[in-house]
Image 1 (spheres, rainbow, N blue to C red):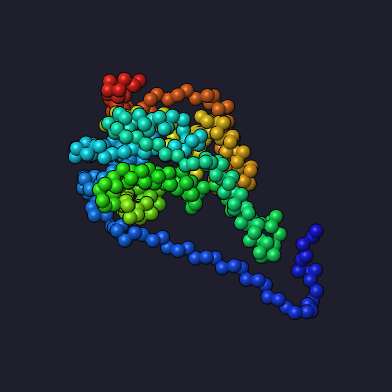
Image 2: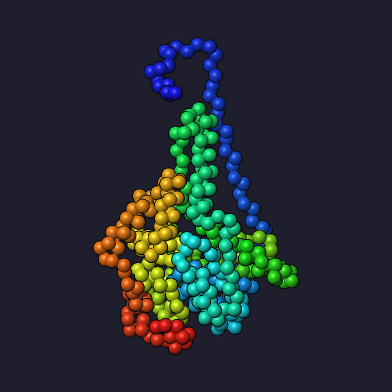
Length: 363
């Protein structure tokens, strides 16, 4: 059936004229109510005072270099205050989409740092790729419904991209923030005998150097979204002002092992394929984990949109294959390659030797 065009309409219409139905008004979102007991501003921004005032110091660890450096920095300060028993390390397990061995590495780093409590949280149900498909189904249904309400053909409705993006980072609250708050609930329940809101200091390894958006974040602030009448959560970004060089110096100081993906050339570590990752990281991921890259490419077809705006997973795979053909399978770089780029081989070799002596790990 062909859709009528302007030239198919009669010049004069007869009969009663009916005004088009107005689109249903969107319900305004109610502002989230914050419990009256939750402070608007942190009582202090001094690191040692933050730790002293907290009932729990929760360090979020992705297993990456920033959270590793942050972990060691926070542990050093807590030890000096005699308050290491307050520290809890939490890892949000992302399942098949994160680098192999990340969860185990985060646990090992916590253990070697002297933290006795390591927690793993994980979003229930679907993983990231499954959630993209579910999100696509909902967006498609909504777009088609709105098209029908406008009197348009629903099969021509434009569906917004279902993938996460810098403008729509729904993956972070789904896979990390939400599950971590379930830990806050458990930690709060353990201290109900205090008879007051439990004070949680959440430590996050975000740095200003990573992006202009993160540069705008405060080093210390009240997390009103995670706070309520039973707990008050203060967000602390201990390494917010640190450079890459300072991060690697802290890792060298800690002697803790870091993820080998950095020696392979990665700048970031979380999801193997992160929409915020640089192109070289994505291609590196496709070379190291080709079966996961293929799964992302399949999802692209199902949802009718590229994984990253202007860069499809199919193109990422193509680039990875071209490098494999040109260079052959790459040999694993020497352990310490990434660190040496920032602090030199002399300091890196000291780190390797001390790490081997302390923990019996290969240099």
